[in-house]
Length: 209
Picture 1 (cartoon, rainbow, N blue to C red):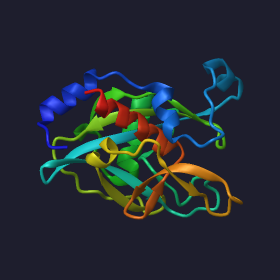
Picture 2 (cartoon, one colour):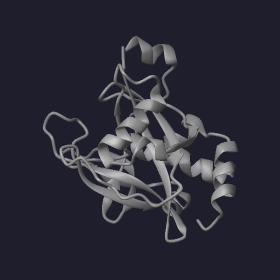
Picture 3 (cartoon, rainbow, N blue to C red):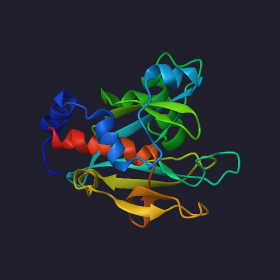
Picture 4 (cartoon, rainbow, N blue to C red):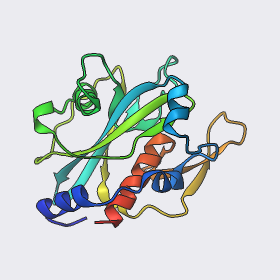
């Protein structure tokens, strides 16, 4: 999307969120909207993720991470946004998002400017309640990823999210006995689940600017 930084960032900050109606376009078929009371009754764990916009070659990008394979991680090997579980030392969820961005892909916290909080999302399989943030950098970063958690950093053009198909493409999950989910395709990587749902809301946000 070729648009000046100031205009784009201000419009994104002012644009209305789509909430679950935007998220559910890319939701797995079992995903339904639960009330805050229903979610809290499950005693969820809390986490935060970060959509980090940055300029590169005259266009806007953001990083996704290809998670390292780990038998103890339910989301092992998946494509996700930088983020993770809230620590007791984090003052709030934005602190979690910034700290995890630093730890996973090496972008220093003072360089990151929070633009907007997106709608939170509950993930039933892992019982995580995730807070999502939209942030930006003024310059192109040099990524230094944590190899224990991150196999690869994917630099995704923001234009890909603006042009998401609706209805989305469907894929069968490996080893799932025919279970099918909506997904976003990027360079032969399949982005699905909570990450695709969060990016679906970003799609709606971009359409609302």
